[in-house]
Length: 493
Image 1 (cartoon, rainbow, N blue to C red):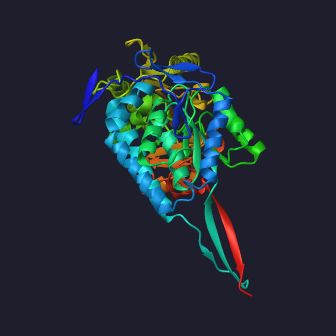
Image 2: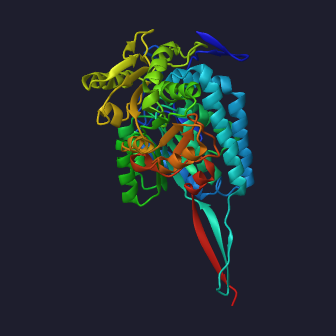
Image 3: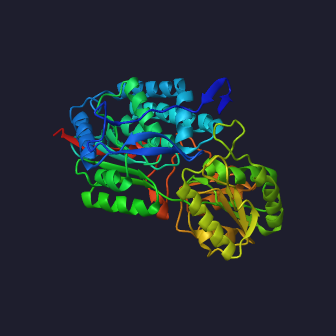
């Protein structure tokens, strides 16, 4: 199937076998192993990819170390690095249709959303980081010493970037772009299920002028490739996005090696609707918050908290509106919700919905798997009346499921919102400006949205608290995570 996106015809791509990208060269894995990549909209293989092992990771790290040590990237002036990053952004825009097709067949993203969200986001992130590359630096420091004191901001070295399956383009760019802006080199391990756009971006980075060895991509299993990268003594920093359980393991290994780490982990955000909310506007944000990217969004809004006077009204509207959200083939222009990334993800959602029924939950909409072309589809689902102690409320489902709970007071709403182990995102609907500021200050989350959901921009940092991780991506704060400060004090006595 094809789709016209504005004036661009998007066609399901034919993708040949892919290799590892190490030291500017495409190469087979040392052991010669390969694995299949499956189109989640059909459940059928689309290509094979080289399966790396620890020796391949070692080769990639050595290439990145050599590229860092000889200064072929870190030694460039920030303005020159910026020119290359701007060229990356320009090539992303020029090759947008190709990127959209690969990302959509890789992870099941609707093409109608992939271009304005994923492609635009990564282009803007490279543009923003290009500006940071030109402006980041140290500063003079006043001191009573008979000395001239100043600071230098320097790159860390070799960055190990480990990224998940749900936003392959965006979550790899959120690490690679600031790492490059600061002058680091990178070894990237994309998710086993969705490596295709990472390999395509390696082509684009090379075409833009990023030197050999500066960015390397090793594909394969997390237990093999991910652990080899985490444990390698040649890595100077780990940048990780993924589950909280794996994040704990990554942080423990980084701690043993005494290297810095940033962690964007799980989420289970609460979306609060106060009694003074604009309900019509709120409904749109609520639906977007839990169906966007088929619910496979760590900053999604799967927990809805509604003021009791509006509770049944909101449930009634959702019960009518949610079944009308178009679910289908990601290459269909009408599709809003595509397939989940794999069968194991659908089965996880099925298990949680079964738990919800056992806990007395009321299924307001959805609640079943969708049989479509052999793909991994689940209908957007709304569940009411669950106790706050239910696993379905407390745990991260990572699928198109929304739980809805009533509250009576502002304090109760905040307590419910903060009652899980996560703290990545949160949000509220109100026309009371004072309440917006007051509640936002009390929500335990790295980012809070008011009267909308998922408002993200490269200038606005995001990251987690509690079991949602630490460190920030986006904004100038991102560059702080990929550089170190050196102080220089020169005696004037």
